[in-house]
Image (tube, helix red, strand yellow):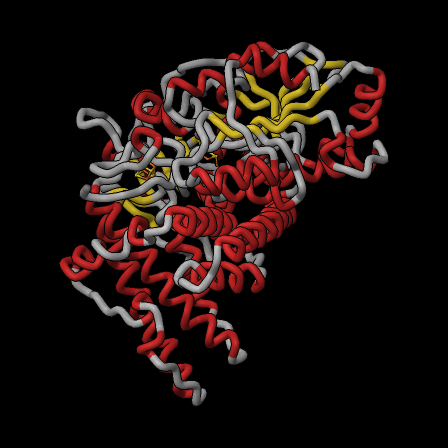
Length: 552
Ligand code: SF4
Ligand code: SF3
């Protein structure tokens, strides 16, 4: 076995990637990421002691967010970036040690886990270390499963916290929790029950971070509103922006204004089209293409430069025409692609090189045309609340289906298209995340003017769906969220979906169906706990599932 990773839904054979990732991650990169995680745990241990002694370190907080985000599936394929992050972590840790000493706090290093004292600067040292810090080094499979469930949830929290942080919204409790959770995964004294409690706490912080990001996005860019998004093209050169970071979107739109270069969104950036602050730009044309895994074809026909602000990156095929037109920024990275550095002193990122590049490119080739409708985040849906409540009371809407989450490349995901097609006409899909691309271009119609697919936005906007559910609960005077006519049929791929799931569990949502397969990192005992405590289940055949849910 040259590596081991089972953090996403596409883990090889539903067990784990051991030779190379299905995502394209090579073994050496996977191993270096294990070492980076190990380093982050060590940094957290010292940061936690400093915090207990009254000091919070902003640089460490930011470092942990960014490093965790970097190791999310499909975010970063740049080995050198991972090596540098690891070195930076060791430096930070040494600085924390010194700071504690200055405060007169001494720690017995012999009692600390190795991650808190380890110094390995060379790539060789890191690669050697990888052999004893990987996931499988936790021998008990239930403890391993719970530790990884927490780690993946915390990676999701870090991603959302980083987006909020980029907009100046911070919550020190979230940093405190992330670092506490990372330390807890090194503590051999914690029992299965302790770790289950930690999983629930992770869900609580998932709710908090999604609320924080919702506030950050809406206070900066307004509340998403119902929008018809153009999916065709215009005759100017364009830049395609992918990922989830709205601050990058803002910087790009500002800098492209008046340059003759158009801007299009790809995959999860689609929801930028719903924000008033972005809609006002004439050169913001719409969305090009589909979800992340189609990028190999869609980047070919786009013709212009592409900017990744976060995951999901698919390594290009050997023969491609776009390798020299892809740029990354933030936590994303890919060896050989140009990386745009961070903002300095609160200014903008400098996208001038991408804009100059675009000017030399042909306009995008049209691959489809027409419009899709979205923008149904909580504020907009609540403006329609009376209409929605009436439709439920009159029986015009029988059931809602929360189908949020991720898309992926496996054929088994056709289930979601068929499921959406099979749903009776008196049902409404509530969605968020790139899972929507499996059904957002079907002509599913509307119910008295309410579209049958209500897209709230990105995966983090699943928070909006929870807010909508809680408001409906109030409107119907129900004691329990689970008494609403809502079925949760969630698709997952990467670790942000893990935090969305844990957040829903924390809010008390029961009987969530998770597909297309259950996570490889759930041991059978941990899976049983989720089944018994929360009624978590997998998926079956679309037609039978629809019938089963409608009979509820
Ligand atoms: Fe495999 Fe997913 Fe890990 Fe990539 S992230 S190596 S596909 S389990
Ligand atoms: Fe999609 Fe990557 Fe998860 Fe943000 S873009 S939902 S998979």
